[in-house]
Image 1 (cartoon, each protein chain N blue to C red):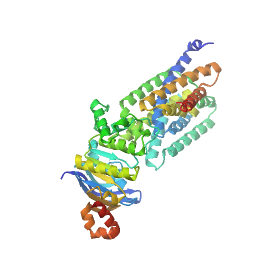
Image 2: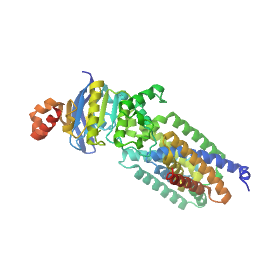
Image 3: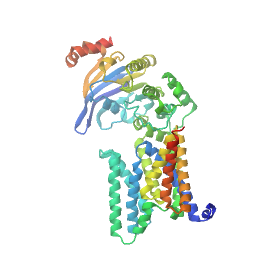
Image 4: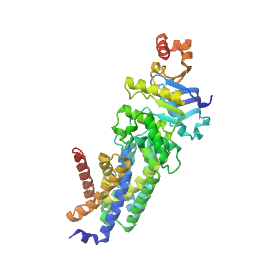
Length: 250
Length: 268
């Protein structure tokens, strides 16, 4: 299997506070990883470090076999931030314009959009079922529609790796289940590797095929079936919690 | 005396011309600053220009030659303070701004005789704008317009969502530096138009007015430029006829247009 992401001996601190300690794991093509952990466990910091947004870290990160520092294939990665809908509501941008931003990583100066770009934007909106909203200002959309618009932005460059940071927070329970189902289909039908951050370990068990549980360090990384058999995890989570996660997965 | 009579005077032609370019510049940059919640950087940098102009007058140099490099340096210092010193932008602006005002006041206190000149910079005097300043405002306006056209998608992306822009390979640090340095030079020019006390109005008012009605970014920019230029042309004209201070009249016209658009939104 081709390596999509390799993290080795990663440390990260905010001043004297250590947020990540000796984190190592590998992600292979086609994986659907549920990245879980308690609040403040370092999940978002881990993802931001992988994406080069948090620079003061120690350790080695490789994306698609290349060191993070020299990596320039950002169009191969789609990202949906936790705070994605927290944009300035006064910003006068249409949904199409926002989705188009996902194509800028493929472009060279002066980064002009072309007709094939318009086709890609339309296809991405169609995939998310919001093609009719393309000309609307993004601030006029509901929270769920905005979530879809920003996922369209993450998908417009046909990424091989999609990183989603707590994408369910702006959605109600039925919409969240639809959303997670949709992500699972992207993984199965298009072969997109997924890393999905959630604090809901039980729910992610229904969709992901691997669990990366962090609490400043890696507590568990492996398949859900290994997780369910692990006596170590039995001790860590307690019988009830482990059973709940494994029940959802099965 | 009619409008055409006034237009015979070169200093009035210069005021219309330079004022329009400076207003358009402020409107273009102001839109980015307002949307990035950096509106008050104009206010802070105008205070720096007060200190710098005081220094120029104190040293007997042409004030803008001192103000442009000093305000540029202050803008970089504000950026660095924000990045490195665990400080929000408004606090960094506050520090640099008060330091400059204090410096300016001390220099004014130490000097004998330039207080009248310094006072004119506080409230602006567009009718005394020089030929050199007209060329400077024209050149800078064209440079800003060219930069905005060339970097449009990068600026748009970094303003909409800076974190995402970084992931798509946009050097947001560089974009911030370009935006701040252009603002620094623009503020120095705008001091001549409306004065230190009112510069931030030229940066903020056209942008917030445009954002009331625009549904696209490009439309917002065109509306902001139009509001700014109309305010300057109208403000100078009204001030000539009613014998009012031009800087304050320009700002009042900006506020009137904003209020008119805000109240008309209720009916449309």
